Amino acid sequence: MQKIMEAIECVLAFLRNIPLSSSSIRQYKIYLLSNIVPYCEVNCIRIFSDDEMHAYAEEQMSKAKNGEFSKSTAIHRRKAAALLTDCMQGRELVWEHKNFKQQKLCEYFEEILADYSTHLSQSLAPRTIRTHIGIIRQFLVFIEQNGMQNFNKLRSNNVKDFIANAAPNNKASMSKFTGATRKFLSHLADTGLASINAEWNLINPAPRYRKLLPCFSDKEADAILDSVDRTTPIGKRDYAIIMLALWTGLRGVDVLDLKRSDIDWNRKVIDVVQGKTVVGIQTELSSGVGNAIADYILNGRPETDSPYIFVRHRRPYDRLSDTAGRDIMVRSLCKAGISHEAWDGKSFHALRRTFGTRLVRAGVPIRSVGEMLGHANPNSAKRYVALDTEGLRICCLDISMFRTKKVGLL
Image 1 (cartoon, rainbow, N blue to C red):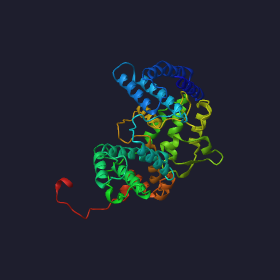
Image 2: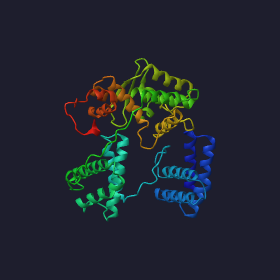
Image 3: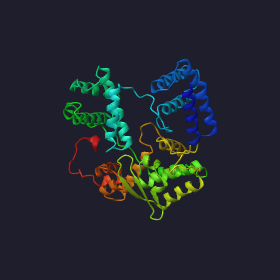
Image 4: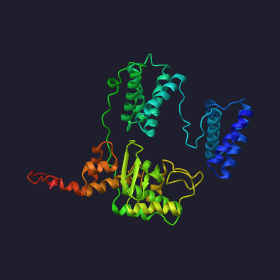
């Protein structure tokens, strides 16, 4: 048990340096010493490996489901176990969300997946890589469950069966599945690991129906901004975030990733590398947006060494999670009295759509709109034309010469 105790001390030292609050550190210490250590003793575990960690995590979630303690307690115990595992396996300790539902693969497939992830890092953004790797992990799990532990017997039917199996639960994103799988199979062919024809077996499905998602009217946008209580630190943060998205059109991830070094206050510009496209973009920093950000930094932001402008207001004071934009919008829409239902498009991204639509309504050329929004494909900005109702009226053709005899149409 000596190695486990030494690893626990290492984990606690890491937690103190994040820094977590003293009460949180005490709680994690209890989880480690009073729960995980006895678990290791009962199961004769001397080194906490990934397999032991997953088994422990499943046990805790099962007990929570049976009502022995809260789900929150199980999640925190699972987090403590993950940190202990990383420490004992010689990995760098990082305070981040971990995917505990990840399905395990045979050693060969895990190595292939790790190498492929490195290959993708040369051309894709981290979030896009995670999406691709998640899909390919499902593919490898599928073929492994069908008796394969290498690609020697991989055939077209296996690929088709995987796509057919994934389709019912991924109706709106099958193009992602086929695209990621095609790219992986092409990689296998290029590296000599398989000879299957990816292009022939993975023709893209028919384009899915695309719902026209709304933007906010000027009245709604003003109501959302007015709903934020700017007298509180969190209110100052949320107001600055909404202003930034509404008047620059930056994607939510780029707003949350914004660092102090990204803003040139003298030139009144913001320079960021977009998380989605990994392409740099420069946008104007208007006085309204600049004042909102400055007010938060000077009068609301916690004291922290984090490079990110917008941070949590509970320890550790680090970057907001990727779901923070959604949470801010849900609160603001509720306070503003704007109805909101799941999938109605009134999301944080609607602020970006509002910015793009305003540009179109102002007569800015579509190509320029695409450039200002940082689209990799300038034609992507055409979607904002569909939201310019008054502009579309001008395009209507006169059909008065086509007389109708049906009374109901007169």
